[in-house]
Length: 73
Image (tube, rainbow, N blue to C red; front, side, top):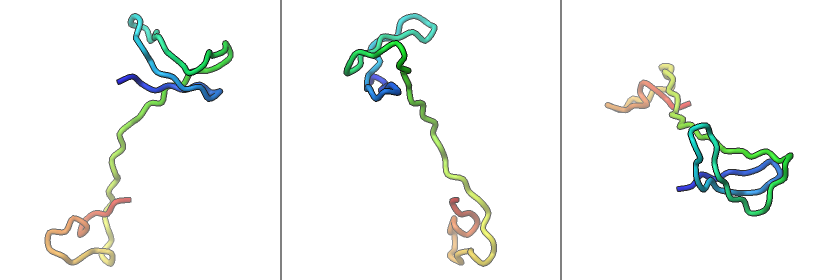
């Protein structure tokens, strides 16, 4: 699946082929790009929810409840 790329001037494109080992690639855009335009590749990082201990008054009294000890921030 090709990675989606954009430019700062709003053009959309895809990476067609990698060329070599140093980050060079062939890209196809919906219009010709200009010399002063910047190509941007969004990078994603998986984020897990953070858990924090719950004080005594917020605790659910149910047996085996995960919310008994932690709550999602």
